[in-house]
Amino acid sequence: MAATLMCGLIVVGLLLSMTAAGVLAAGGSTPTPHNVTTPTPVPTPVPTPAPRTVFSDPRWDTDHVSIMVTNTGAPISVEAYIDTPSNKNIVPVDTGVSKRVSTLSITPENGRIVNYGFKAYENGTLIQSFENSLVISASPTPPPETATISGTVVDSATNLPINGAEVILTSETYDKQYPSAFTDTSGTFVTVGKIYPDSYMVTIKASGYQTLTGMRIPNVVSGAQKITNPIKLDPITVATPTSAPTAAPSSTPGSPMDAWLNLLYSPQACCGTLAVGLGAIVSVTAIYEWTMRQRERRKKEAAEGKKESKDPKEPK
Image 1 (tube, rainbow, N blue to C red):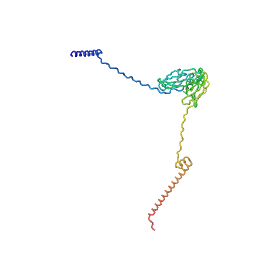
Image 2 (cartoon, helix red, strand yellow):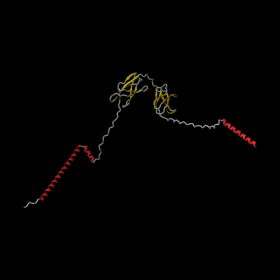
Image 3 (cartoon, rainbow, N blue to C red):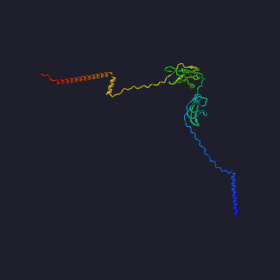
Image 4 (cartoon, helix red, strand yellow):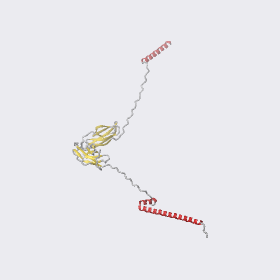
C-alpha cells in the first residue's frame, strides 16, 4: 500500500515538472489573444449626375458638323462622332465655358446621307445626347480670302458718326460669318482681316439704336471695297406718356353747383347775374337808409311834442 502511494506521488511530481518545463520553454509569456478584425469603412457613394441640357444650334460646316456646348455645371467631356460611332473625338468642356464642338471632317459628297451625334458625360455618366442625320449638299470650294470692306455708320436723325457700332458680315455663298468689326470715333469700320470675294448679308448693332438687319452688299470683289453712302441707324425712341386731361367737376343737373358752372362757362350770363345781384344790393341799401331816416324823423317829432306839452300856457 505504501509502495503504491509512493508511486503515485512520483508520477504527479513528474507531471508537474513537465508542465513547468513547458512554461519555461515558452518564455513564461501569457498566451496572446486572437486578433480582432476591424470593420472596413464603407465609402460615401458619389451622387449620380442628373440629366441637363448643354447642346444647342447644331450645324453642317463644309465638311463636318458642329454644335454649341454651354456648360453651367460640373466639368464634362463631349464625344462627337460623324458617319459611324467609331469615327469620333472627345473634347473636354470646363465649368462656365461655352464653345462650339466639332466632329471630325469627312469628304463631302452631294446627296450623301450622314449620321452624326454628340454625347455629354459628367464623371462618366451620360447627361445628354443628341443624334441626327443630314443629306449633304456640297458647297463649292471657296476662293482665297482676298477682299476687305469698309464703311461709315451714322445716326439717321443727325447724320453724326456712331462710335462702337458692331458690324457683322456673313458670306452668302459659303455661309461663313466673319469676326465682328467695330466703328471708331469717326463712325468708320473695316473688316477684320481678309474675306471671300462674295455677296454679304450685314447686321449692325449699336447701343441706343435699332438693330439693322437684312442689308445686303452684293458682288464684293478682291481688294479693298468701300461702301460709298453712310449706313444709317435709327435711334430708339422712348414714347413720353401723355397725361390725361383733367375732367371738369361733375354736378347733378339742376343743382346749385350746375348753376354756378353754367355761369362760369357763360360770360354773358355771369355778367348779367352780377348786375342783377349788384342792383339788388343797392336797392336793399337804399330802402334800409330811407327806413332809418323815417325812424329818426319820428323820434324827433315825438320829442318835440313832449316838450310843447310841458311848457305853461300864457294868460289870456
